[in-house]
Image (tube, rainbow, N blue to C red; front, side, top):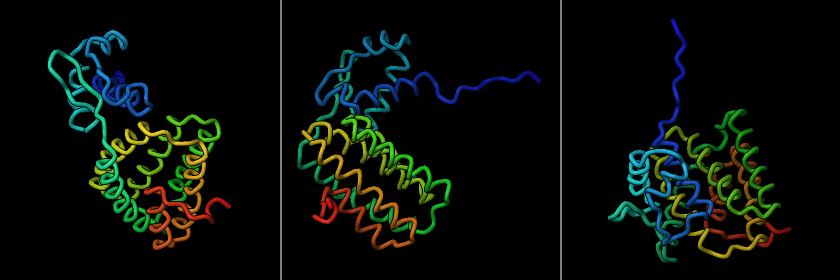
Length: 215
């Protein structure tokens, strides 16, 4: 039988991930218009998959589709972002506590790699990459709960948190301090200390840092 190669992603999937990456990297900013035609020409695809991708991104909560074939990147106000952060903190506390002592070595190694890549990006002051790696690390943790609903909620909330982060002037020093907290969280998870993992995760998610964390 002839071997048939099956693409893992459709064209619409690829367009979806491209636009999402452009938004979360700060290339497309809050309030900016995204033209179907411009995306179509940039990627060399028809407008049909672009339109499909934009509908998915609207459902995801990153853009709002407008008449005349364009969309607008969502802008979050500070109050909305604070509400999202509070909900995310509660969920992430649950994730950290529920996976503590239960993560397999192979998965833990992925955590460590992402934490390291996050720190390296921070040292280079590549904020977009820091946020991307931080997002990947937290979502990988959510996957370990074996609860798809937790992962889906985390992914949607995370996108909104990233938009808020990109709209703020976050100092490199603050980012470096935040990414170092990953190692303490991972230590607690590996050691099976669920209560400590949850406490550290909440502080990390809300940006609450004790003086001892800087020493």
